[in-house]
Length: 333
Ligand code: ASP
Image (tube, rainbow, N blue to C red; front, side):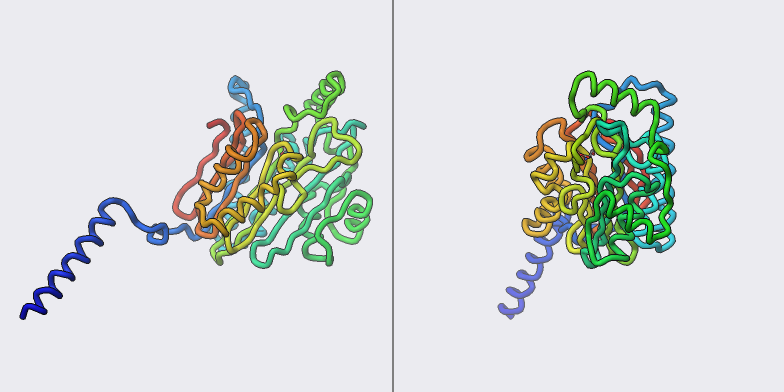
């Protein structure tokens, strides 16, 4: 009889401790429902003046929203993360407001040299191009490198030659030019610097699809007044782009040299994988403790559908959506 009483008491104790933990809000992250799909995009980080004319702000918001709708449509209907990130980036490459595709910044020689990379979290396959001059959608050429060659990274003339063997759309180099970017080059030439101030507008997208696969894509014109074949982080796998189903997908934007030095995108994946940090904590650690103020930002989505969009600049064009009804666009903090 005594034994039965002791067992009953022990059961009550275990139950009440369990209830107290839940009441205190100490649910383990695994107990939280995860979204079936999730998506984040960026249109570059930097000094984005808060007093921009209202119609310009509206314009940015509209194109970010349209790109987010496109990604949401694909993921909601069961499309792959890879197709979603490519489609979102293609759309942003077509918009002259962003420093990718049409609207890319000018090099020192008043031309355009475009960089892009894409990564598939299923098997770490990836593709990248740098210094391409006639490719309307560099992100699609990067995907072709991934899918149609044994290589990962093609540059300049070789990448153009490879493009000749594919059906990617070609345009003359001046197609990418805009008056705004030309003014930025003139200003940078007068000051004789490679301007980080005017480089904002790189675009990127990360996604988790319903099958549980992650993908990331990034595309840019680089830095105004860049010379000597300068390459930033955007086409460098592990620096500007990373995706691994085991941890997360990342797309960065900012001063490329700093991102290359620190292997930022891969470092974020490593913190999540090896130190079991949450996506948000890992992203904050990198952006605020490793990078310097003003360097830039990043977007990331984890295998559980968490989204992080962190930056140490005044603003970052960005948007996020998921299967649980999230849909938001933001520019400043
Ligand atoms: N990361 C890009 C580069 O350095 C520029 C940017 O994201 O603003 O080429």
